Length: 283
Ligand code: SF4
Image: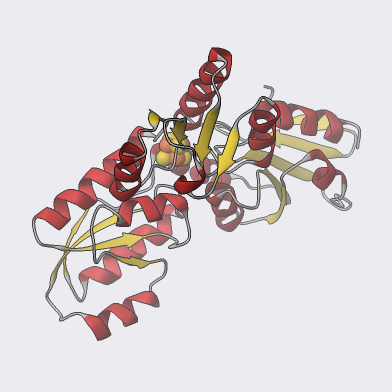
């Protein structure tokens, strides 16, 4: 991919890295191998948070469910890149499901850290969004774990727990890296903190590329449900647009923009990125 192509009036700059991370690539490779096997496969939750990827897999016969009890006993199930809680694994085993696991190794590392903190008797604090599939899986490792997503949330913890309590802090892998560092620092002023809270390298590298961008506006390609895509929009210092499909790109008004950056979330297919560039070249 070329950088800084001058196009009519708009300078178009592709930010790197962008697009699929290693965890997403590996999960999709696994899914495609399963499709080739011809067996009916259920996937618990979206395999990655991208509408185009999910639509493609659905069209090839993948069945997405939100509740493990929807899956017939004995079937093949793929756990998504976001990971699942020990309870879900136990239910899958009780239902005699044939498990294929696409949990990203970085997410698995956070699970292990949360479980280790819990075993040692520390209160586990997860920096993340409580509604996100990854966080639901992590808190399953540490009953009683508290989820916070902002410095303001620490006030709630202060009402519940004594100053000086020992806590173990982990983070959802796709948070805003600066926010995570600030939250851990603020927690340290009240609790005795042991922290392994940090975003994964793929998230950090994509956020750093966005922070370094100095143009007028940034187009971030990725679904609204994608946490890492939304964080890319947040960390940009320029005006930002987000689009999850080509129709959404077409609906954006790029007038009065002289220098447009383009990037994409870690679950956004490169084919969509390429077709967006082709479209932008015609502006
Ligand atoms: S964003 Fe990070 S944690 Fe999530 S799948 Fe990619 S590499 Fe793994």
